[in-house]
Each structure stands twice: as C-alpha cells, then as structure tokens.
Amino acid sequence: MSVSYVLDIVLSLIAMFLAIVFHEYAHGHVASRLGDPTPRDRGRLTLNPLAHVDPIGTIILPLALVVLRSPFVFGWAKPVPINPSYFRNPFRGMLFVALAGPLTNASLALVATGIGRLALTAIPVSLFGEGSFPAYLADAGLYFLGFFVIVNVILAVFNMIPIPPLDGSRVLAYLLPPRGRRFMLLLEQYGFLILLGLILLGGVSGLLSLTSVIWERLLGTSWGIILFAH
Image 1 (cartoon, helix red, strand yellow):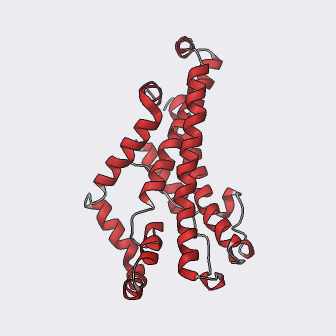
Image 2: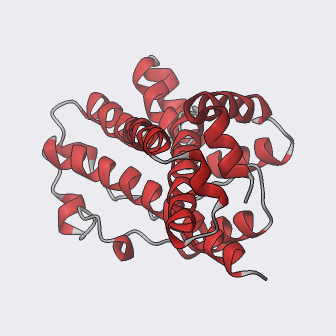
C-alpha cells in the first residue's frame, strides 16, 4: 500500500467527517435559534468532531467505502437531539431544522468549488508533472477539495429523500395534511429498513446519477482528471 494511497484515504475521511459534522451542527444551530436549548444542553452545539462521532456511520462505513473505492460514499453522525415542543410552531420549526443540514452541505460544496477553481487558475498546469513537494501539495489540496465537493453534494441530495429519518421526511411532513403527518410518524420506526432496502435494491440509482451530474458540473473536466487520476 503506497503512501499516496494512504494519504488519499485520510483526506477522503477528513472531507467526509467535516461534511457530516457541519450538517449536524447546522441542525442544532437552527433549533437553538428557534428556542430549543436541547442541543446546547447535550453538548452538541459545537464543531468539535468528537461530540458527533457515530462509530459505524462516521468511521467504519465511510472508511470501508473509501478503501473499496465505492462510487458512492456516505455516512452519518449521531443525530442532534431536538425537542420541537420548544418551537412556536413545531412543524414549521422542524422544517427549518431539517432544511438547515442539506442547505449547509450545498453551501459548503459551492464554497469548496469556488476555492478549487481559483486554485486551478492560479496553479500552472506544468507544476503537476514536476514531482516536487509544491506539486504534491497542490495535488493533495485539489484532491481534498474535490472530494469535499462530492461528499457535500451527495449529503445534500441524499438527505432530501422523504423517508425517515432523513431530512426530506421532515419537509414532506410539513407539506402533508394532519393524516399524512401521522402516517409519517408511524413510518419513522421502519424508515431505516425501508431506506436500506431501497439502497440494496437499486432504488436510489437515479438519485446517484443526479448527484454525479451535479458534482461533475461543479468540478469541471480538468479538476475531475486530477481527482480521478488518484
């Protein structure tokens, strides 16, 4: 196993970890702004990664997907505890809380894209063939930013699937009449199994294609070549 391969794994996991942590922090921050003290009281209103680690979703699953070079890398952190009874309008409050995570990931993807594209215009193309330390550093930086874009796009889109416990289910619950909301609450206990079944049966393949189109457009051809040359 080469040093560059190990570095790619480390950079990929850091990018994944940061995207997940910001996603969960966004949920807690919005809930706190709407009057819920629970995230702060539970020590989750922080960007400290250790407060959000889920052993399986944050470490084991992303590591396995990266090592296996899966085209779809996903993970999760411990959900931020939220008590909607503190909100003036619980359903509207949960709508804002739910949207905060995917919107944060979308914003991070756009910011990383801007930084990466500026770096590409500033770094001479000839530098990448030198094999020098600056070239190695530039290559690693662009790889990290590129993977960060991909992960944030996947998290933003995938979390909008309207199946509990994903954020899209909260958005759908807000739009449904009372009977539909009660159905979504009943569905919550089976949501993870339904979601897992959809993934295993290829039910989200169209969504994966959509994420690919988005991040390919954001990265562009030259950046994509650098990223997938690893």
